[in-house]
Image 1 (cartoon, one colour):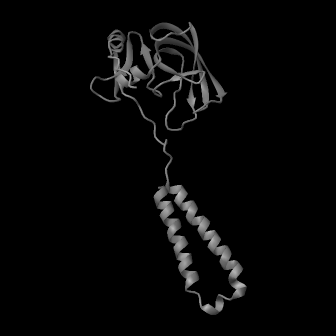
Image 2 (cartoon, one colour; image 1 turned 90 degrees about the vertical axis):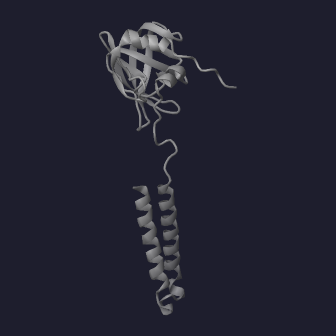
Length: 198
């Protein structure tokens, strides 16, 4: 879309340039130099703007980690009960957060957590965000500055219903299905730790 708009602006700019260059010499007298200079300045700005609009942002797409990478990246893995979610305007880097989930930790599988925690979500990154609702969840968290946040966007907050959790289908990259919570916990705890590179 941006490429099409840029191309259109380029065609308009060069079309106007062509018309200006084909004007009879008698019309391009000294008295016309000021409007002509303004036209050239306008066209230069228009052309620069069309080029700037054609370059996409480097961080325009979210990356969703597969199961093994999410387990490895998480500083903390736990089963939590989210009791309430509040709207917020929390400023941070690289994102601001628009939600805070208040949760009670029921079981910790990796890392250490206090009994009561706050998890930040509703990121200002339009392509991927974590949104919370009350209930039980299997969470994969890390710290963004002083805030505890999901380490894999919405995939880092997996809902639990009774004895099942919505989890990765074995052999599929990011396809989920309802599976036995006990089986998934065994898979998480037996996931091989990758050696740290120097």
